[in-house]
Image (cartoon, rainbow, N blue to C red; front, top):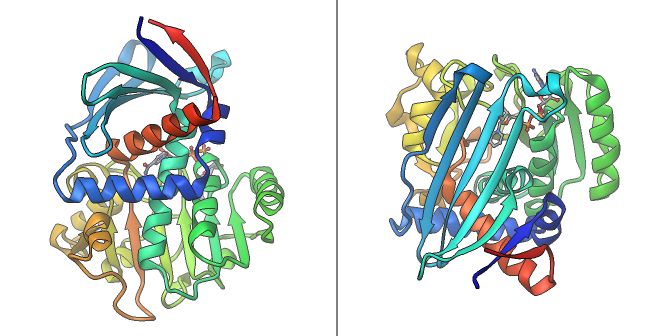
Amino acid sequence: MPKIRILSAEDVRAALPMAEAIGAAREAFAQMQRGEATVPPRAHIDVADHRGVALFMPSLLPRTGRMGVKAITLFDGNPAIGMPRIQAVMLVLDAENGAPLAVMDAGTLTALRTGAGSGVATDLLARPDADSVAILGAGNQARTQLEAVCCVRPVRRVWVVDPARPAAEGFAEEMSTRLGVPVRVAADASEALRDASIVCAATVAVTPVFADADLQPGAHVNAIGSYKPRVQEIPSATMARARVVVDHLASALDETGDLLIPIGEGVFSADRVHAEIGEVLLGTKPGRATHDEITVYKSVGVAVMDLAAAALALDRAERMGLGTEAML
Ligand SMILES: NC(=O)c1ccc[n+]([C@@H]2O[C@H](COP(=O)([O-])OP(=O)(O)OC[C@H]3O[C@@H](n4cnc5c(N)ncnc54)[C@H](O)[C@@H]3O)[C@@H](O)[C@H]2O)c1
């Protein structure tokens, strides 16, 4: 009888330390760039009667020997009935024989792989001496953004800002303890950016979360919040002057106001996107050119990031004896 492994959020977290997740993200970007991966467009179902949306994100990584699909649902009415607005689950299958191998919580997986993507980008694009970080937003993604950045640079100082002050205070306390780096709450984005060589924007804001003039020369920005055409987290002026690198060009140009709004304003254009991160990773396009230029990594998320992280989490969970096995 075929068996399937079930991994909870805690199992995924325990199986996938951030440094390992960054390795998986590198592998995903490299395979995608070499044209080895299969990444069909994600399927989108509106569940209008219940103010819900479901996204199904399939992919195949032949070199990893895995294929899978992440199902992520966003139901706006859920908080009112005591349920989370966003829920997600990942199914992993064997790419050699199609056998289902695992089902795992994908909320934690998403946060880990999104952070890991920014870890890869920061490693490739931030200045080698970057050691101070501004975190804009103090939610789930912000935590893994900071964790990832701390894996690839010797971070000494962190500022966090969030209009929900208790969220920022909780973030500062939790992350200072977890990472052993002082994390302070800034009064506003301007204060947070004053000394930041790395900026992570991970908010649910719909308009830009900082002023372009507040960016320090040579800062690197990870922008992961906006995935809708009318939602903009990064000022148009920043996009207009930065070296912009994306996770997946077609998806980014289709989905995010961080590109579409400045394009609509005439201050940016699709051909101004310097590269996909995989191109910089494989060395087919250069990364940062000067000490003082601004670099931006814009991510909307790609299914191969989920699959690579899930495949590694499964391998490691098997070795560590994590999760529960069930007969199908
Ligand atoms: N790129 C990707 O692959 C990817 C993956 C997962 C989530 N996301 C997106 O990232 C965003 C954040 O997700 P999350 O799970 O951390 O959400 P969350 O609700 O846990 O946290 C978001 C935080 O942003 C704060 N915020 C709102 N406006 C702000 C502002 N102007 N300045 C600073 N903080 C502000 C909120 O108060 C909240 O604390 C969402 O838009 C989500 O859709 C992107």
